[in-house]
Image (cartoon, rainbow, N blue to C red; front, side):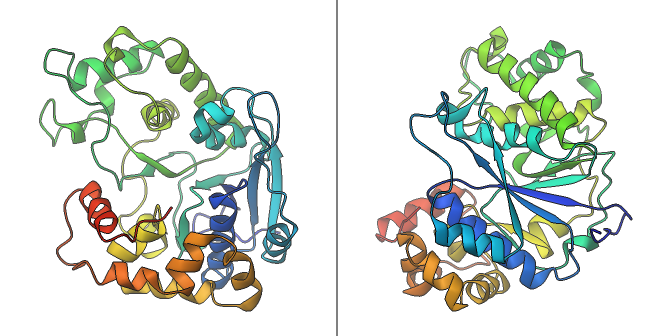
Length: 334
C-alpha cells in the first residue's frame, strides 16, 4: 500500500518522459525521489507520449538502458496518446497525460526538470484545493500600448468558462499589476483526481487555442497556453494561491531547476550537492553521460564554471539576464 502523506491520503506522482532531454531528467527525478524521500512508497509514473498522427516522429522512450534504470528506480512507464496537442505543442503532454492516470486517486504532477530534496510525504497537500507553483515571473500577458490591459484579458478568459473573476484577484496588489491576477508556473500542480483535472484542462486549453477571446488578439499562446489555462482550472476546482505552506515545494522539498545551467547558476549549494549525489552511482552515470549537456555540466564540471560566474546572494532579477551571461561565456547547454 502507498505511504500516506501528511494529510493521511495516498499519493501518486507523475512526470512526463520522452525521447531526448526529458528521459534523462526523468532518471534524475526518480533517483532523487528514491534517495531523499525514502518514506514515499507510492507510485511514480513516467508518462510517455506514443507515436501517432499528432507527431512527426516517435516521441516515446526507446532506449533500453534508460528504461532499465527507470524500472530499477521504481518508476512505472505510463503510455498515453496525444489526441489534442502532440508535436505542435509539447507542453500539452502534461495535460493529456493526466487522462491516463488512475481515476479518483490523488496525484501531484511535477515537471521532469525537478529534483526532490527531502520527504515528499511531509507536504500537507489539500487535494480538494489545488494549487500550482508560485515561482514565476510576469511572463503573460504582454500588455500592448493600445491593447486591453490585464483585467480585460484575464476577465475574458474567466467569462468564457463561467468562472467568477473577482474572487480570483489578490487585492493586496494594485489594479493592472500582474501579481493581482491568478498566475502560476506549471512546474507542479495537484488535485484529488487526475482525470477530472485533466478533462477540464484539455477542454479549456483546446477552447482557448482554437477560439481565443478577442482580448487575446495581441497575445502569444505558444509556449504560454498551459500557464494561461492552469489558473482557470485551479480556480474552477476550488483552489487558488497559497493552499500549501511557503517554502516546501520549490523550496526545501523540491527544486524546479528548469535547465542545468540555471541550476548551477542560481540554486543553493544543497541542490547542487543533491544533483551530484544522485547522478554519481555508476549505473546512472553510464546512462546520463550519453546526454551531452549532462556529461559536460555534471561529470566534466562545466556546471561549476557556470556557478563561479554568479553571486547567489545578488543574482540578476530577470532569468533572461542569467541566461545571457552564461551564453556570453560559452557555457549554455540545454
